[in-house]
Amino acid sequence: MKIDPGRFPIVVLVASAAVLGGALLSQYWGGLAPCELCLLQRWPWVAAIVMSLIAIIVGNRSTLPWVALLLALVFAVGSALALYHVGVEKHWFAGPNACTGAATAADTVEALKARILGQKPVRCDEPGWSLWGISLAGWNLLASLVMAGSCLAVFAQLRRPRRRAGICRGVA
Image (cartoon, rainbow, N blue to C red; front, side):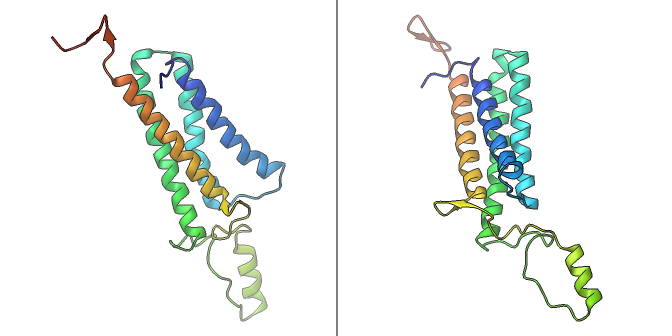
């Protein structure tokens, strides 16, 4: 598969904006409140948008392989965050204390009031929405893995020596 170097940052920008836009639409239009981990998972997509915009504006072909590698690293971090969130949802890992765990009974009204006021409204260990049994964190994991793999493939393609007139550079 041949990648046009000028289009690679545009593809990353569009894909990242679509994923982040979908999360924001589900929050503000769909009424699905994000948990603490959901908000954390948005940051790699924001970073990818900023990096791809810079790559589009600068447009330097010689730095494009390194931009692809850096984007692959960003998406790998996003994959790790999403995997952690999926693990918290599946109870494989312990989640942050602020948004996981069972409610305990309070002994007094003051203790109950303090517990209610101190508790986050959205729990990280209970998926708020799923499609075909896959939560939003799971879909984010899949999208992040696809983007990381795509960026690595672009890096490998752009770093491969180019052939000129049937002769590979660097070979006598």
